[in-house]
Image 1 (cartoon, rainbow, N blue to C red):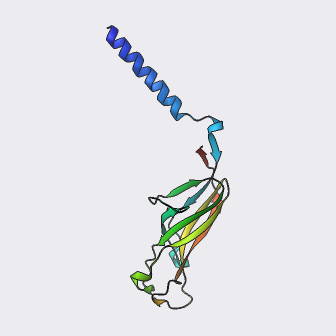
Image 2 (cartoon, helix red, strand yellow):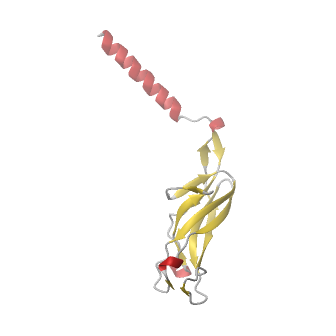
Image 3 (cartoon, helix red, strand yellow):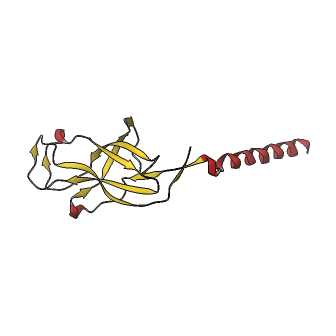
Amino acid sequence: MQFYSSWRALLVAGAALAIQGCASSPDDMVECGTVSSYVEPDNSANLYRVVVTHLDGEPVISRPNYLLSPGEHTFTVAELINSPDLKVSLSARKVKMLSVNVVAEQQYHIAAKFNTDKIYIGQNQGYWQPIVWQTEFHQCEMKR
């Protein structure tokens, strides 16, 4: 019986510490903005999804949202343009950089803008550019 009550006390104490560790006080939270690449942009407006490969020069595993401190952040992105009008070679399909000036409580949706103003063939990399295609209010808090 003594073993059972000691074990139970340890379990309760461990659970209390785990819950306390999950709880964040307001002092532990900081304002942030969100950069997102998961929303499918309007392909009829020549906008396509991108995959993030690097954030501020560091390699990342692409994810739908990036919670970031306010300020300038640089994304390295690869386009996912699946238009039949795209005629450039695969070797011309290179990553590009996009700088986003993140403001607290804002969400920035990023995409690849397919430039259809002229025909791009061969190695021409001017066929697309990364852009912020939509900005909206979005409540955001993250741990320090």
